[in-house]
Length: 417
Ligand code: 7TS
Image 1 (tube, rainbow, N blue to C red):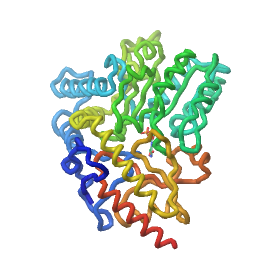
Image 2: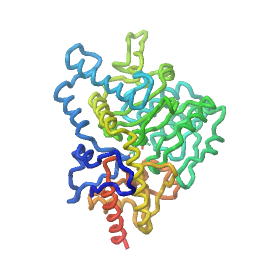
Image 3: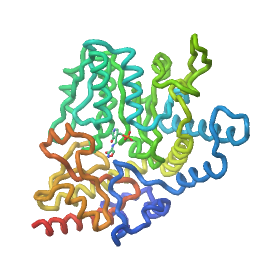
Image 4: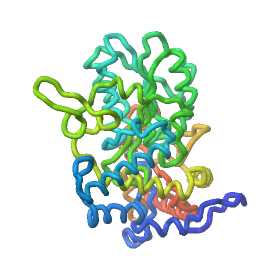
């Protein structure tokens, strides 16, 4: 099950066996079989380093932050703010002030739509998204359109699941106020040319949000080099706890935006006549935050940094190539999403078997995949399928697991013959 990757002889810089040992959950059996976890696009597993960080926080220094002068509160505050700096270096932001902690990618996008969008956009302004967005990067903009009279435009995709850039160019114009596009598609695995997307939007003075929920776990991110205005991701897809995520925003934009929520910690002074808001990043962090989650996110980033995002990307690229060749040999299997530039996600249909039935059969063998529309219904519509089966990889997956997964697919075909 855990054989070395055997695609070519290029030495790999990742000791996957050693890394797997860091993930207690991967050591278990499911339905009597060793767990093969291929649902990483939904959420990733947590290394012991992250789990321990949670345990330590609650056992040793659980305390509210930014408020207390006592020792535990100072310790919690220091850990919280240190994690913010870790996030800043991870995505190469210019300042800690540009790192806002939120619940996840979904909340980050809603924050931008409601704070930036609602204060800046009006009747007839245009927001461009794409056909391959997760619902989290569709619905907040639809809500904003209802509230402001702005208009939603959609970049179409081709049958390989790539953005049609010529159509994007045609959509851009004087009225374009906002472009919000995913870095990597959760339903197709397509890596979008975000640098080019951003450059083209800026040429029309539009502001750009990149949804990095699927990119952060698989590739290095440099928000300054990308030149994006907003970048969002979720901790739980990045080997960190659930309920924590990040909004990166350019400082001058965040500075100019009204608060998203009001409450404690986001104010400098409150009176009934007037309230003064805190400086960044606290202006956008009302209420007691997910302190443990932030500390866990810092621990996850430490863990990933020690491995190296380049090594992870290189390994996963090979593993996806291996898996793609292997599934192609399964009769009746159709891959949905065949972009040239892809990562870590293998969406497919298998003739004669509903994806949900397939998911159930694979589960008997201890294999966890996701089936359904993956919160990307427009993608399903494009490919005229109600659902797909999706195997999504992380650096702890092995070619041995892929072999076992393929065997199970063959078995499923036999059952449904
Ligand atoms: N954007 C993309 C591209 C995503 O894949 C997801 C979650 C989100 C936004 C929302 O992230 P959240 O953490 O705020 O929920 N994607 C998936 C998935 O593919 N299966 O389960 C969740």
